[in-house]
Amino acid sequence: MWIYLLLFSGLFMGWSLGTNDAANAFGTAVATRVVKYRVAIVIISIFVVAGALIGGDGNIYKLSSLAESNEVIASVDDVRSAIEAGTVGTLRLKSALKAAIIFACSGLTVFIMSYLKFPVSANQSIVGAVIGWGLCYADYSNPEVLSGNLKQLGKFASTWLINPLGAGLIAFGIVFLSKKFLEDKLTSLKSYDHLVKTGYIIAGAFASYSIGVNSSASVTAFYFDGAFQETGVAANLLTSPLLTAAIGGVAIALGVLTFSKRVMMTVGGSIANITQIDGFLVIIAMALTVILMEKIMGIPVSTSQAVVGAVMGAGLVRGIKNVNFGVFKRIAVAWISSPTVAGLLAYGVAFVTRGYFGT
Image 1 (cartoon, rainbow, N blue to C red):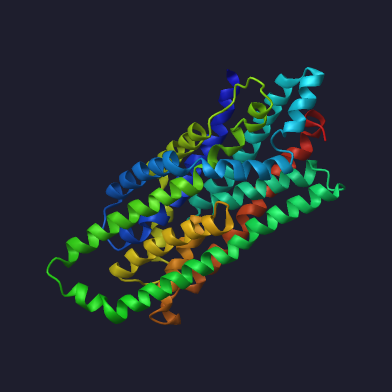
Image 2: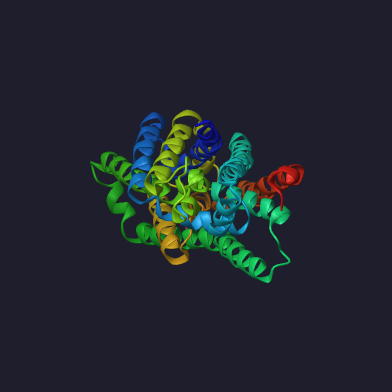
């Protein structure tokens, strides 16, 4: 039973993710003073958990595949070999320990970035940690391992450019159309304030739901005991993808409720000067981008990168001078630093523990 204690590393990852990703749903609403911070975090928490319960289990398998090819979690062949050798218990323990290490390295990275007010990607940090571990342990002399990992890594890395760029284009398009055909009419309405607030809440709830669907797997995916299930071996790790995603959603919600304000204000008010209506459209653009990217690419993407790209796209409608490129450069550096730091931490731990985990 004590193996379950290793889940705390994943829960820490989820808490860190929540402190960072809350800005993606309500950062612009809070910064433009349309929705109070306390109201925002309650709504985010509810809909993140709902998203995890309804659709979060889909990404469990996708992240597990990356972890398996990088020697983080056990494959079916590993389990079968352990059955023959009578070492299933040891293999299970080692898989849980490696998952805990990956989440600890990535969670620490995200927490540090959140403290520094940088909206970074938890998915980036996790992938960076997995690749860092794989560089130390995976057999890259095997052409199949090399080609498989490079393909997976390339797919994840491509989203780091396509995701914010796509969000920026979508946001620019809808904000441009809004200013040309809609904004003046809306601001002249007597019920404008109520209308905008209602719109922000609906959009924020939708965005929070998309975070739950997209990111809950990032918290507990490596504890999902798929290989043990497939071989019919009794397991005492997580065996239900739905439960695995639900635990991730709850951990994210706790981060939202406790330590999310710093990053929320950075995203909402520092990157570009945007109007209340622009801020609402930014949230819509972010949520649409995340859902489209997940459908097209088939992997979880960064909601943080999507919202930053959307804010920039919205700001550029009023001209390039309206965007604070100094803040954006700092965030871009954090995007690069996040997977690099997590990868180096994981590689360091992997190198030190080679004698225990083997090759």
